[in-house]
Length: 244
View (spheres, rainbow, N blue to C red):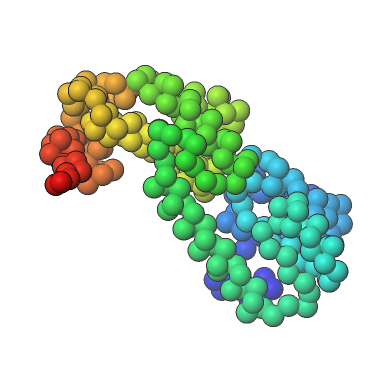
């Protein structure tokens, strides 16, 4: 299997579940393929650990097994496996499932990026990741006017190292922690431009930018329009007009 897949992906091997778990949190692979029957730590235990650790819960995992009984498949899926393939299997089927899983991750990442909003309740992702991201959004929102809000501070609040937070956010959102914080600032700024009576400089300071010039630059990078033009568009946008 390694030889067949190595032409398409970078492969890292582990001799058993314990060895695999030692490398997974730092390596942050795009996908894990595990046999159920392994020494020291079997595939179901590895899957359970991966899916219940906030550092790794987002990583797709496929279990391979010679067990064909439905209860074994249900057990694997219940502990969080993303797919369960019985052996012997057609390699083309495995390859297609891997491809589809990685494509789905990119779709989810794109969808999530669009959903980053001052309202954390709108986020739709897996429960463990949702809890982490909601907590991150709430903390940034509560400190959004503080320009000194840092990645280190957010990492401490979430109980993660800066490195693990970086890898986690990249996997889920496609954004680094710095970009994640800035996006939330800009989303809040867009809301204030639509709904408040503050001017652009006041809004820039309100969402944690010390320099309105940089605020305008990042706003245009994010939304493709300057805040002044965005504000003008919002003010001239017509309401619903009825002719009776």
